[in-house]
Image (tube, rainbow over all chains, first blue to last red; front, side, top):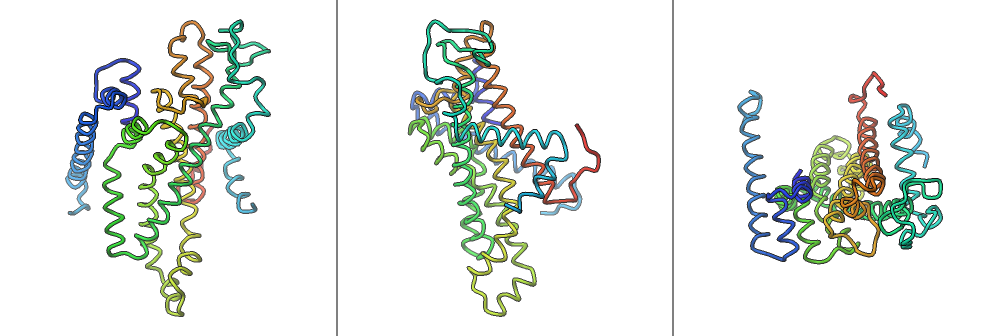
Length: 64
Length: 283
């Protein structure tokens, strides 16, 4: 899905993190690359957490 | 080879399954012997022949430098398939070994492998591959290694769960009781049961590997000496209005390849789990 973001933003020239990581990779801008990685990883983990919580809320059989 | 008869029969019952199977085989043939199938040399630049629409001489037309698009598509199949098969073979091997270690031995091995899997899964694959390829260059070896290293976690996770559930069965206990070693149990009892699932996941991951490779080539990170569908699509961007066929055919083949691989994987999964089979056959 995030691959799609990179390709789409590059093709349509929309400013976004997908295109940012592509351009930083070309320009060897390491801090930006690291920053994007951290941001995206935290987002993924947070999203998993939220989904698990919602699952626990909606499905009475799930108990943590 | 006799084991392939039944899954192939199951696939061939529907037109879509049959098409996927035949198309994948065709792509693999194109990938193995491109020199004998391609009508022209795909690298040959012919300045007098640029932008020719599809004709009997050039079934897919020629591109901006006069190269034959059909030959380029055939050689592009080789690049995609080479990377996909090698990367997935590597990741299947690595994932299976780590999954069996984690599932069978449990304890600290399990903890270590699970932590690595969880860490890997929270990192988006494409970004990681993009950054590594941008840093280390886009040669084929780099792509195969990087894609192989980034897509093994799902296999390891599934294998670990499967091995856990198999390990609890009675026949394993019986085998241990008569003194079978761990290696024997793993190779004779556990491996035959996970090969099916690993094969299905590997086929699906081949589709992922093809699209990752195409995406990287499209962005310009692929191997510059190789023809790739992604690179053709990148070139075709400029000429969409003038010469649609430069991008249409690689895009079509890319789409059909990934579609066929996904359908194959899906149907094989249904074959191994009869409960999922649809009674109604569609198109």
